[in-house]
Length: 407
Image (cartoon, rainbow, N blue to C red; front, side, top):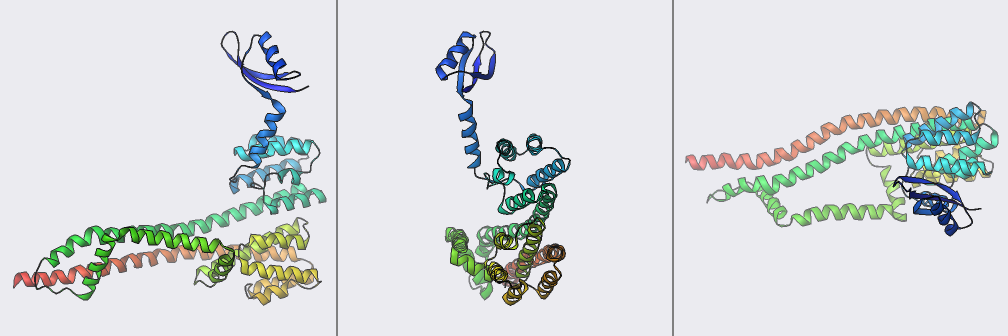
């Protein structure tokens, strides 16, 4: 018999809600009326629950990595304590503060209770749980080591989150400074300089230096065509992003980005760190090598390096080594190739990859910290150079003006 959820008012005017079983919606309303409840809203509980789940699964957005890592660690702890999986999911769903994650776990609990495996239940929420996460969960279920795998997943997720945050912090500062510099220069050229230059131009017979005239012309153009100035910047950024997001543009940009001074080395190191850490985590979790490489190629987020991984996969499928294609690509340093080769020969590839990942995580951290240190003086020099040119363009004519007035 269908169960209906209702909200209503009692004879005393108090709010009430609950469930009632009845043959149909009309019969449910009649029952409530007899019990003295004025129905405000009523709906089939099963249909309402299904609609909510469908809506949540299709919802855009994602869960913060730190929330996902904490939730994964809680799952691992309870499973290790031999708490049944359904009870574990129920307990963690109540603990997590993120509503999307809580809803996903509650839904997963119901599906697992109905006989579905954990990785398939979590797979209903691809916007929350990545391919890596699901593959690891599947491997853990199949091997009976779900608690160990989830703990590794938590550590992996936390490491990736820390790396992402470090890179974000390093790149945010120069972007902000670039915007500030642009606005300062625009303000100087459109507000401050015109006032000063107009004084010089008011004196007949005064010959301004070429650099002052150039500054004056730039100022006039920026005042008259300011919309082209900002429009040009916005259009350039838009066209670049549009090109970069296209298939061919992405391939070209991935190759170019690896050759950019300073930044190219960091981009390559980040990709290698992701490659080694992710592959090690997947292999330790029992995911087959070929499947692991399929996942890893998307994690490196660089088409040029992904091609090298594709070639490595082809080699393994033919019974050959993974180290050869990595070396041939030119994107993997000798240390990485050497360590991977040793790992393959000794049968200890997972640990070798972990050692490489640890080394590169440390190197990326060091490079990013140094980058932040280097960017500060570069930005300072850039601002100083612009201001110096402006000052010279104003001070030299001012001396000439003083001499003219004195004469």
